[in-house]
Length: 337
Image (cartoon, rainbow, N blue to C red; front, side, top):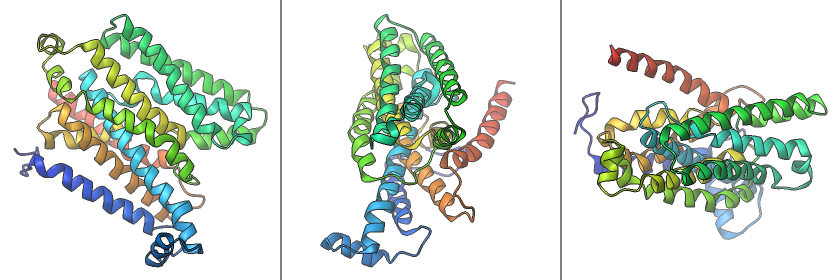
């Protein structure tokens, strides 16, 4: 099989190569920071249980940041591939059904109510609650046998409502500093996260990944059309339920701990789709690994850039993704002519 660039690709090698690249970027994330860290000594002290400054920096600052970067990127990339496969639309991404906006609204509610100042994990828990509420709305529709078009319309409605409610919270913020804190969080970042955040979202993300991965054969069949997929014995309502549920668990928990990090779920599936033979089912895990790589690389760029305070990660991914989106629209326009 050859990609559009003419380079021959062996599908069996793609996932190992992406996995090794993700591990390399994770190692780089551990090694890079604002101050020099003797990584070998830090690892030795951490393994031996010795309390030292290098070990504390590694375990309390850099390890949670690297792990969350990989977990969040995997969730966004996999969910993007799943949404594009479900919608059969190359412009679909995790936020298309209102997941990201609802999770952000839940976190903003925790900010606005003051819970984030009194309860350690109120912010991510609020985000998860917002995502679960969006799930409930979507599943009510799925229970009525809604079509894909209905789900898209429901997502538009959820996005509009969550955006309006978030803007209302900013408008009614009791002081400008509270509004500024909300805005900074909404920009997305991996800074100042701890292992508590990792353990909170890890089981939710794993559950979401398994649900989405279980739909791989059905997504391949769906690429031939809904009628064809149904004739092959796939229950489309159950397929949508698993995909939406998995995406909500993975992306909702990601947004809950990092804020909004856009374009990952849009860019990565497009880059990797030619390498998997344009098969939506095979693209899921590949896009997850690609998303992890992209987020880790962007976060490394944030830390290496000579700008203080550091740029927000969501801003960097948007700067990467927006030109890509323009190029994609131009390519689709040329293909339609």
